[in-house]
Image (cartoon, rainbow, N blue to C red; front, side, top):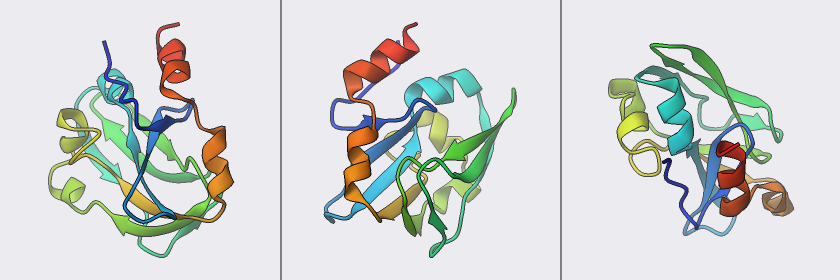
Amino acid sequence: MAQVPEDLGYTEEHEYVRSTESADEVQVGITDYAQSELGDVVYVELPTVGDSFERMDVFGTIEAVKAVSDLYCPISGEVVAVNGALDDDPSLVNSDPYGEGWMIRLRARDPSEMDSLLAPDAYRSLIEE
């Protein structure tokens, strides 16, 4: 069964959002469920620092042995950091999706959009259907 940490918000497209030490910044990645469905991740294409996205814009792609999938921005914001470790080791998404496998940090444009994310129980219901 996929891990669904209680301290995160989720999208129906299987991204997660984690609050950070900075009140207006969040960390974004894909969920344990998503990485397990994709299989072995071989490449991750991420935006550059300074890029801005609206909620649910495609911010990158993830390529696995089975498929290539779009990555969706869970909230509107500006990219303030990108996980460069994924360039050298994209499998971090598989081995540690909620830790070393994070993808981007966003400065939220509209923090109220966090309210539109799925709570852990709602995300569990989604993936258990």
